[in-house]
Image (cartoon, rainbow, N blue to C red):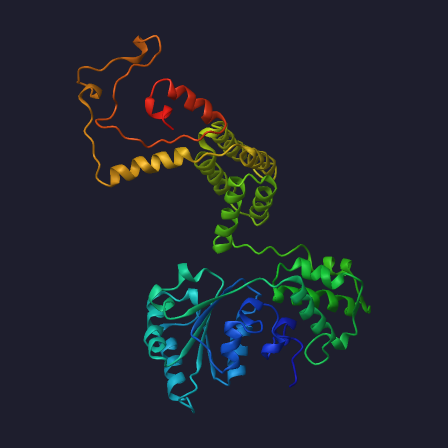
Length: 419
């Protein structure tokens, strides 16, 4: 086959057989379920979920080639309901062997609206087509549950550096589809440098190789260096979509790192968010929430620090706001932890929502009689009830400031002495 070398390297080097495919050993390694199905000539209706450059589209084409099935492709961004129906009719009518069902491939299937997704449902249910969709967005959020329940979701992970290196070496030496005709050699560590910059994205890695190797060849050179790569392709690729699932994964990692008292991990995840252009106010809001939810009364200063950081970031702005956020995150991660306040308000709310609606005691009402003013007592406390029946919502922790708070409560309320 003759190749147009104006076609991007990543497209020219797209694997055509299962043995050429790199990565995804958890589903395609020897003895793994999806590989076993493909080797037996079977393809399940499925969703391939993963970041760009993890091989989703390539895997669809490999599945079709390895099992001898027709592949009908549409793009979810530009397709309408009629085009989807036409594709399904084509799959059914033109099938030479009724025992070999065609694959209907919908790229970025999450772009289909509910009506468009529902059009696919009957054909999938009857087995008229094998539906394979790819998505870089979380399918459990973006795909109709009725359609998703009839499909298997396979998650594709970013490629590790060794898998990326295999692809780069193959591309550099391949005379037919790759860059072999350029006669480029690499200094030690050059390909490893590309592999470390691409963030597990095979397409990004091959694009960087093509740009930097072509630049060397145009200049009459044959040796590709790390400096050539940096000049041609710039900074590291950050895998992050601040409106998509990566956004929520990284903020989740930040919160859990603070909760787990690991300041280094917390700083790293926050740096990821900031480097990817995430909203500083969003980060500040999350820090304020976790200061109460995860630190709470063990160190009430945590909320003060978080709120002060939010106000200071608003006043100062980036890039200096990074320093303020760094200070706040380190403090919050190092602080003692308690979720007692979070659990207490949740327990009280659950009581109300379950129908336990208590009447306000007469002596606590504006016009009631019998209320004793605590400040008239030298202890600034008097033994009187504030609920019509005994109820317990707050179960204090025993760390940091909260431990001292409990000692004070024990002097007044017997229930805290019983803990």
